[in-house]
Structure formats: C-alpha cells, structure tokens
Image (cartoon, rainbow, N blue to C red; front, side, top):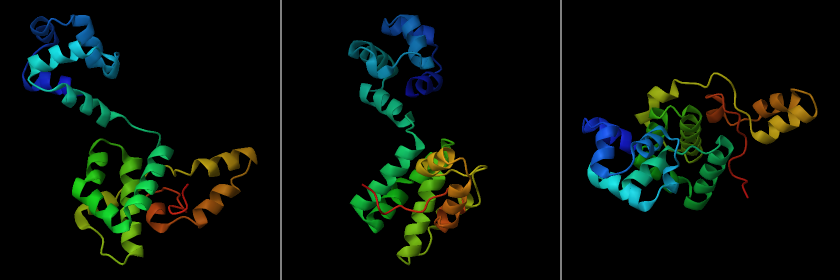
Length: 190
C-alpha cells in the first residue's frame, strides 16, 4: 500500500503521521494493516494523511485499486473480452507496452501472469507474429498444479469422474497447457 511505502521512504513512523495529520493512531494503524477499508474512509481523513505524506488522495486510492485481485475465472473472462473488443493485434500491443505480464509476475500473481503470457503467445502463433522475447525467463515457469476451467471442475465433481479433466487436457490450447493452464476456448465468449 502506498501509505506504508511512503512512510518507509520518508522514514516516518505511524505515530508521527498521526501527530502531524491529526488522524488517531488507531485509525492510521487500521488503514496501514488493511483492517480498515480505505475506500470507506472519510475523505477528510485521507486528505489529512495525503497532505502530510505529500501525495494525493487519488494516488492512495489508486494504489489500493491496483492491489485488488479478482477471482481467476473473472480475470480470464476479462482478458478474453479485452481480446474480443480490442482485436488481437491491438490487445498484444497494449499488453506489451504496459508490461502487464511482468507487473503481474512481480506481484507473484503467477496464474494471471502465465495466462496473459499464454494468450500473448497464442495470439502470436495464430497471427503468425514472432514471440516477444521480453518474457523468455517467465516462459520457463509452470504452475505446480493444473488449473481447469470452473465448468470442467464442476462437471468432474458432479459425475464423480476425472474423465472431463482428461478430455479438457486433450483439447487444451498448447500455449496455455505449457504453463499447466487448461484452456480450450478463448474466442466464444458471451
């Protein structure tokens, strides 16, 4: 969180922030520990903290937003919709320019980073574009356990059989399968 990072950079204690801002130390502690939802904090509280730290309220809120991690199925769906809305090439350019794969990887969000890299590699293959070599170090990685689509997992549990899992693996897109992500359909989305 930006507040913690800024405190550390400025070599300032939470106690000093409390004294200089007039915000109770308990509130500062709750915000810094994540116990308090910063999005529900009073604007005045955030303003006082931001002013002392010489940052903006927007920067504080944006830093929290960036740390929010959606469910993997939601992430996958969002990526597929972005590809559909933007088109293959524009999507690829956007992902590379923003360095989203590296950002996710550096946060240790490995399933998301590998899914995005698999999508980039898949789109490169079907559009006959050379692979972006920037991520070769990440390409050497693989998830320790396979991640199956939620529907496949549900079917497997309902019928008490691993057969749907095996079938999903057979038809998985190679770029995803390489990272232990079982994905066979990235185009037919609603």
